[in-house]
Length: 473
Ligand SMILES: [Cu+2]
Image (cartoon, rainbow, N blue to C red):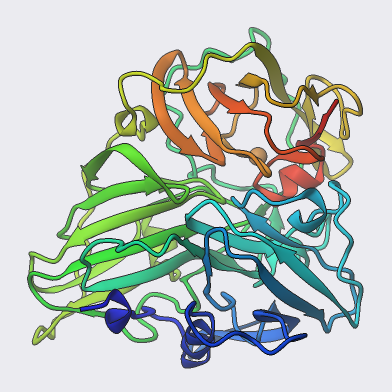
């Protein structure tokens, strides 16, 4: 049976499901002049549950926006219509496309001006779970950029049989209605127990600035207990594509009563899949997960943090014929370790160039907020990071701050080679969580001429200094 016969969209709305169908490849060619896809940016309401209805900005009347399926190597056009009063940027996260199509102001992509439209035309790739989202700067406006409902999945297919799954689901983890607080509990990163090779001898103990928090969560557009459960039968195999679409926090999730076989990270197959009790996802990261439905009951798939789960970050998984109260079981705790997904040795050429980057936080360095620096300097590091086309780079990221940061380089693929001194190979990613006072090292080939933005995927960190522009010689 074809996988599409089984295609289900979890808790996505009917409107989204119909959009996703429109996005199927293999349909008759669009008439000349009409784009393959259209995204309309406009106000939306998201009914998380009957008592929490969020007003935000989204794509095509929903948040998340439609699942966009694309064929790798097949040119595509997407019309983006901006019905709002502010310029917007749509970034295609994890795709290797030219700077002017990548969708950031920093890289020189034109804005989608208010009440106008822009056509994106590019050749999608590589295959796998990618996503799209607003790349507008938000600064102190928590109703802009990645704080809004402007996000959705891109799935790039190669036309090959993806394997035998009974259901394929796309689940995005989200928080809503962000606010400023000086009292953020730092429970989003479980890297505190790791070694701290980059911890400075003298810590800056100045009081920190306001940070962004949330107490309202969902998976896709529904809070836990609201919307339809994921309905399964014993013996089924699920393929779930997870995305942490938060602008604020890293997350850990689990499915009570089940293990997760993690087969891909950031949409790229891992050399060594692992069957684990939970999954850690930094903001912007994705994971492809297989789950064997072998434990009949009614279960909760959600955040391992009780408060976050109770405030909505979860979805019920219900076996046929089972009608009890959904059960949660705390999974066994373990430190997240990218290395276990790797291979023993890299097959890539050895790097010949090194980029050594250190990250620091200046408490209240931007007035009310903290300021972040890369190598002691603010954005844009003009002429500091100039890549030689074709060269292989080793990039060392030294996190001298008291937070774990999901770092992302646009338009390039990283191979993870080291975390806190532990070597690894073969894990291809575009977003890597650099641990608390820790270090992550990645290799990449400079094979995408043009400007490339490097930044933390926490919106507030990016807006207040945590970014740098790479250019080619
Ligand atoms: Cu950050």
